[in-house]
Amino acid sequence: MRKLLLFFFCSLLLISCVAASGTPGDISGAWVDDEERLYFLDEDGTLGLPGQTALSGVSWKLEHGVLTLATMDSPGGEVREQKLVLKQTGSGRMEFTDADGAPVTWKKSRTKVGRLEGTLFYRERMALPPEVIVSVQLYPLHSPVPVASSIMPSSGGGSIPFRVYYLEQTMAPQVRLAASVLYSGETLFATQTDETVSIPGTPNVLVYRTMPGEHQLPPLKTPASYKGTLKSSGKSVSVHLYLESDGLALLTQDGDRNQYMGTWMEKDRNRTIEITRGALKPVTAAREAGGNLLLNGLSSQPVVLKKADIPWPSKGFLIEGELRKQGGRPVFSECNSQRDIPIQPTGKGYDQLSHILQANGNSSVVLEGRIQDGHLEASNVFLVQKGGVCSTENYASAPLMETYWRLRELNGAPVELFAEQPEPHLILRDNGQASGSDGCNNFFMNWKRKDESIRFSDGGSTLRICPRGEEQARAMHTMFSRADEWNINGSMLELRSKNSIVAVFEAVEM
Image (cartoon, rainbow, N blue to C red; front, side, top):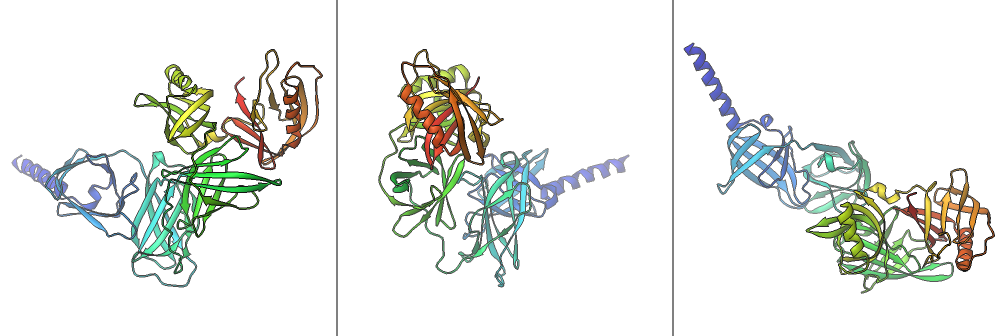
């Protein structure tokens, strides 16, 4: 019995010694420190820092009771080491002392960490230096803020491996990937445009040789505003572009009631700016000598935008987002840009917003307002959905067909409603027939679409005589004969003619 107890005691002692000194396999997995920072100790000795984009993990090792963490804060920076002396471990926690002797506690985390492993390849027949630095960033499809990044030494021939750790619960099924290969602070290879990759997956991404003189431009100084002229149908239309320092963008056009808020990001070594506009196709702007931008994608011809000190538009526009409370005050999270915008306690819409929050709590709303000095001033609120949140689905939430579309704007002017007369509206049926009211008479017609194109034909209406609104009714019928494109932005249907918005409808729940 004494021998058995002695053996048991020695076994416990041996286990405790192993736990204190540790081996790499003993502590692999996800851990969180006193400051809620997450560390992922991979089994092969690679260190992941998911959720951190300003710092990238390189490696980890546990030798003689000392945990060494190697990190990098920039592609051209040095590898820095942090040493933690392991004092005690057990029950899902580890206790250390840092270089200053201060206590540090790590706890086992249940956070699920994913790995995106792939390769970068190039077509040139050239050998790489013995060790290069690979930098990879993952971005949401419509955001300039990275959700995961990796900076780590690598080697290889024409194929260079990379690995990015990410938080599974916050990662979308598809992301944009930007990558570069560096040596001694110089960029050897880089992606020309961001690559759209699937999560999970094993992407194989082409990088291009960066020639001398093609180094990265300095980041654009923001906030910045630009003005240009678009030639459309023989007319000159002013175009304004506003770029904020937090990635918020606003693109406006004279005569276009819906001013498109979104995000902007620099690409192609800061030579190109991509501007997202919700459900609309992104547009790009190339940086030119002298500080001008060459805007492409707004029309068939590029638009030269010159630097101009212009204020944000004072005229209100339609905007969709999530209404919630923050610090006891209402805050609006705009759907396209996903930015939190404080609400100015002025304007007739403020009382509406406060009442919505009090009655419904967090809600999805479409409102009419303007942004001044970084604050949203609401003038009217409509289309309230209790408990709604912003998502990519919100950009096209209302179906085109079988929806009651109430006319809100016609040829750039608000629609008038008249007592004891029907409101102007439109319903598109899936059998190719459309019906509605012009504010006086009921009408019917045929319609068809192909992709973003739309056509109305063979219309007719009742013959009621109305005391008011005849001119508006005629303008509505003329609009249908001119309309050639459609677009849904949130709960708004836009009909266009030659790239100009001729009518705006709002979806109404019946």
